[in-house]
Length: 332
Image 1 (tube, rainbow, N blue to C red):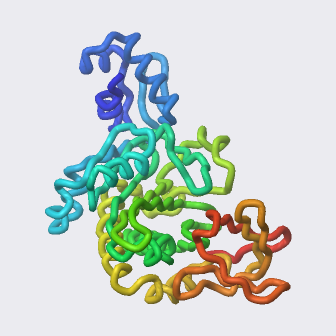
Image 2 (tube, helix red, strand yellow):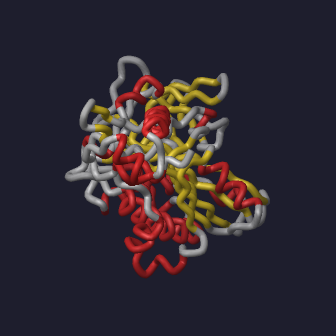
C-alpha cells in the first residue's frame, strides 16, 4: 500500500472528497478509505466530514530530498551520493548501521515513519508518520572507541546549536544527551558504535526530534515531552531544520575529531538544566544519588555524594539521570 500519493494530495490542508481522490489516484472510494485508515494507524491525524471528504488539520510538509539539498547549498555536493529519505523503515539507526557494516563511511538516513524506532536503554521511540524528524548519520573516526568520550554530549550541543540558528530559544540539555525545552524532552540521541577498540571505527548517530507530535500518541510516551510547534515562531520547516542539523553536525564532528569535548565544556554548563540539582543516576541495578556539579572535560558527570565526589562516564551501563523526589530542576 503506497500512502505517499494520498499524503501529497492531502498536504494542502484542504478538503478532498473520496470520489475526487479516487479519480486522481486511480483508486476506488473503498481503497481511498482503507488508505486513510492506514494513515491514521500510523499516527497521521486525518479529519473526515460527510459531504466534504478528507483533510489534514494543517498543511503538511513532506520530507523532500531535493529541498534539503537546496537548503544545504554549497555543502550539498558532499551529500548527494550519501543521503537518503525513506517513507517508512523499521529503524533509521538499524538501516544506517547496516550501511556502515557494508562499507559506508559517511551517510544520512531519514524516514517519515519508523515502526521499530529505538531510544536509549532499549526504550521504544514513538515515531508517527510525518510528525517529527527521525535521523541517523554514519560518521567515521580513526582513533578508536576510547577517543569517543564526550561524543554524545557534543552531538547534543551541536543539535542545540543548529536549532538555535533556526530561531529556537530556551533549549537545555540533560546528561548524557537529551535535549529539553521548557523542562520537557524535545529530542533524544542514540549512539551506536562498530569497529576497532583502538583503531578505525564508525558511529551511527541517531536523533529523534519532536516537531508536531499528534495528541493521539501521548498515551504511548512514558515521560514529559514537548515539540517544536508549541514553541516555534511560525510553522517549523522540517526540511530546513534537517539541512541545518546536517551542516552543524558535520562541522561539529570535524571539531570533535581534533579537540574532543573540552572546547564545548562551558557551553554544556550554560545549558545544563540539572546543574546543582539533587539527582539519582540508575545504571543497571545500581543507584547513585548526589548533587550535579557539572561535567568533566571528557563529558563525564561529576556528582557530589555523601561518600564524596563521584565521576560517572556516559558509557556506564547506559545510565539514566532523573531529579530526586522533592527537588525540581531549574528552567533551561
